[in-house]
Length: 126
Image (cartoon, rainbow, N blue to C red; front, side, top):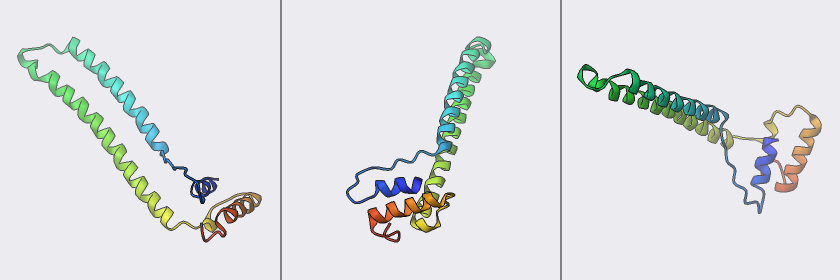
């Protein structure tokens, strides 16, 4: 049915934009928010347990930088995963043929093909 949604979005006269939000990205966003919460909690504990001045003068800022760097690493990994996914998606769309879709119900296949032929004239035109 995702193929049908793409067909409708790109039918003649349709002005529907397709937004792709990978499922892995939402998981990464949740991880990032949990990480931010944990770093803020750790920051509060650092104020209590790591004294200022003396030997510990540079410990607190270094720990803050380490926590921020870990957050940036998480975002960088998610961004790299997203870039790889989008590159693969472009490759899949450039070689896509509707006849190669995996449809489990033959009735659904016929309905999909008929609808696409009605919108585009033929399956190959899609």
